[in-house]
Length: 316
Length: 300
Image (tube, rainbow over the protein chains, first blue to last red):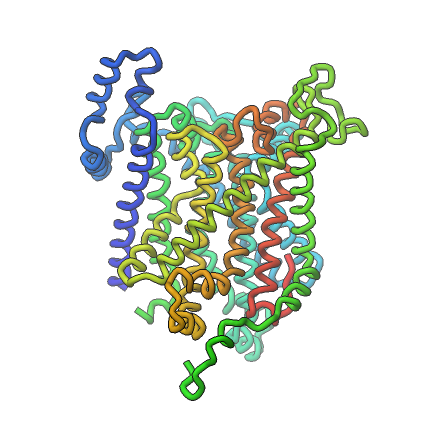
């Protein structure tokens, strides 16, 4: 087990290095002179040269990269080229919106997918089971933007229960208000991602129903449903946990769009604004943090899956 | 390899003819019927838009703002009086283009990565496997935004980002398939007959993993259409003079409080099309996967 964890950690580090290099060099090698952009169209060549000097753009690229990596190790992602604030500071501030949003969305996605997914599998030959499966299939095809708009129309415009967009200016001072403004965005991501997840839960449950150990358990006198719940579900949980790693990426991407739709001051909106400004420092910082989160959670889930699955534990 | 009977070279590469059964199962599969119908309609709509649309999709008409659906304007008109149905028809071109373009890029990237990851020397194989595992952690939208921050947003960025990230996916999924097929007798026979690695790949290996590829490509097109919608909404996709379903959503967003119905159509068009590609992929998987064809086909 320890060996497995160590290998996984090494792989994670290799992954982070590759990811950082890809992000850094993609953003540098591609055309567009950052100094020119900052100086604006009116900038004189001297001004541009000065900015280049200030930003350390005259240093060879590999050295710039090492500098950036060194910064990351010290917890420093550079400074925004536009606002001049440290990237870490700005990300941390925006994360107070995005992290609760993503967690809330995850909870909603699980609440949607697990019970209905299992139900859809257990009742697969009834109208209700088919209805769940078909609905999930259709909802998984809905663009996140549109899902958000429809929820706004229903819950904000028609029913007036929740605010259509925005986030309290004083942040979490009034936790009730903050959560109220996160509910619709989280519901948007949660329902769409939950429907994707539901299909996995359903097929994992279907697979479990056909397994020998469930049949054996049923033969020992348990009802089929009890046999499935006690012996099959742990296996379903396992495959759902491993799909969750991929879902994290979906949640974060959903956050980017939903924050724009609901004008929430989160990391996603920060990213969208700065791609528009061509603030490379900020974009590479934010993209790296996003990717690192996905990679780290992927590694954690691998380890977790091994911990909770006795079969995998023995094979090490 | 059979020890007693060395296989006759010309007989081995032929696959058993079972396409009629495959096809028969396909045309009866409800998902396939829905998927193919919608995709044919989509292609027809996009083609039709080049020769005819009910109204000029670009012309603003201040007297005809926000008309309700009627026989004259099937789906009503938008904030500047354009006929929504006409804009949808023209927008289908972008959808088709993005879907096909992304699938092409995905196929090239996917085949490349799968071949590198399955058929080359061990150190390269392992290296590619690690690389693929890292690349898969980059969400499509982030790749697109990175490209957009360097190039500015365009449909090409959408196509490249989706194609690349789904290509990585395909590479990962088809690598084990390719490795499995690689050991098959007919591949060895091909080698024995003097075929080079590239020719062997195209004549023997790819046809055998084709079903897996086609299923993945169908899903890639679904993702591409969703990505176009998301990126055009964020302003990094279709340029402002190109009608696209994603742009329509972005343009109509400010009015959902007053004219909620207008936003229904582009969203519905995207959903139905994405669903079509998803279901088509599912159907192809169901009818081509030998492990699944024997079991009763589970729909939806």
